Image (cartoon, rainbow, N blue to C red):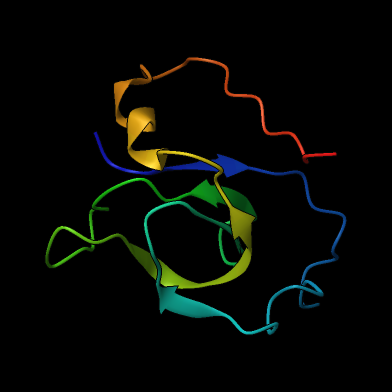
Length: 92
């Protein structure tokens, strides 16, 4: 299983850039990082190789803005089946 991107609704008008689009965006990411992918209007959880990875580390298709990290072992997400609900919460 490769990383999954979750589509987020966007209120940005066509032709306008999302405010997170330029905030320290990068394509090389680490296992456990959480990112916003402006091109796909998606939230990404990186837990293993992606379709564009050239090795065991994840790589985003295009630059993502890193928003945080998974607490604990993010590779456990490899066992989550397609279509399962994953809840993301901000720790208190």
